[in-house]
Image 1: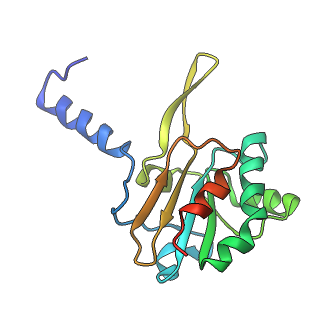
Image 2: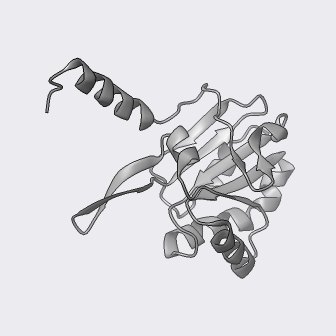
Length: 167
């Protein structure tokens, strides 16, 4: 459907820009949640993985892979941060249940996911809905995005992210 008026063009471009993903070299948008603040980690590499929902099969597998590699990430001066639209209580319960040793940031209003361009229209069983597109961002010590892993396949993902980090 083509835009029919100036206001339609503005609305269309506004929608497109909200859903465009960030790329390597872009400044990482601030992330604040609970006691976490991304800008306080300047000087460290930060691995931010966006996942759809705590304690679901794919998200559990991905989170546990990051847990199992946490010491290797720490050796590379990299901080792991999990981010989902879950409420803080759900994330805390998830972290405790699986012994996940890293920070989780709640994003129930999906503002952070929108800033990172990972809040997208999805489809399951013919039903369309908005949700997180599983994506990981590696943010360099200067606060710029170094690498983006889009449409993540869970198996082996943590290891691939680890391999992407500078030694």
